[in-house]
Length: 508
Ligand code: KIV
Ligand code: ZN
Image (cartoon, rainbow, N blue to C red; front, side, top):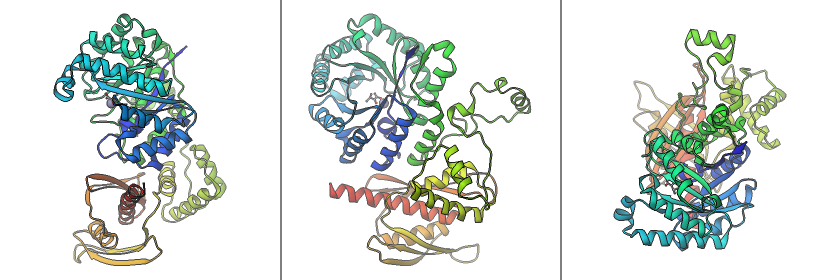
């Protein structure tokens, strides 16, 4: 059976989503999980965009060995040279060059003639080819470009050495039949097309990214560019999990396969959601909380009798834990370890000991510890940003009579103990004000959300906070059975991220 190449751009186009900034450690963690998931290509970033982007691509290229590691470059010599510097240590490096092709972009943005665009495309594909065999070229905004002109560009870049030609629906404008027609036209009208893989890159502005990608696959495209949970610029990109599960579930229709280990889908989705702070909507196909829940009595009756009546996929094939086993105060190390293994975690001894200690603390406060609690706990324990300030103690008083007051004790990087107190409009405001007095970094809180991890009054509360400072957004997360403590943890997490980013920028 023929295979569709899965090109994941969560770390590049996905990270371009407003407010989705990730640090290098987080990108590396996602890249390692994408490797486990079995993606063929990871677009790890846009190396010329910033020092941090360059560094992230370089580290991923060094450490993630199975997939192809790709760096994005505009059709400029400096971009291409920088992309090569970033990916050159990869086991399988790729440079992805793009240049706008549509009249709309050409006339209003680039102010270049068609001949100039054609020449630059050819020259820059050739420049990338001097560095590496695996070169991808994208004529940006292809879906709004005259097909004959796309054919010319593709022929030129393939002659110059491009091995993958990617057709972007940059603004999510295409309709499946029309976009499929473009792909078919490419196969018919580009004389050297058999020397390249045809790829598609669809955005979701009209909610058609997956439909457009699947239509293209049906018409011969053999690479799809996509992101986990469909995150990305504006309305996002085609969602990896939807594409992969459509190809798998409807094998009868597509007669195609992918390299993806679908059992890793759920974990990857959770990880990306936790690290980017983008919550997955409950009705999201494949990975949403309701994707496999049946509410109607008739459906429940059917599923109990025979799951296939209302379930087209077995939730276990996407890695949704089947067991509803709950742990509690009496559960020991062994039971906890087993549950972690079943959920797909393999922790070092030291990480396990820390996680187990937190599990025991939680079990003292909460009667039943579910899989979701464990996922939240692991996220907190193992994904803390390298701490600059450590939150040591926090105390609040609030209610409808007194003025909300918080006192906070932090441990500074040099080990000094810092303590202060402040009043606020509410307990969270008082906590943030006190922390700000102690840390002294101007910032604006732009988002604050609380959600409970599970049902029940004793549930863990997860808080997500975004702060903005000097035009950059930093996301922080915290979890605790006490939502004020969770808020303090989330705020510290965002501030630590800000301080770590500034420190890294000033030392490079
Ligand atoms: O949407 C787009 O056109 C892109 C290109 C860089 C491929 O992201
Ligand atoms: Zn894009």
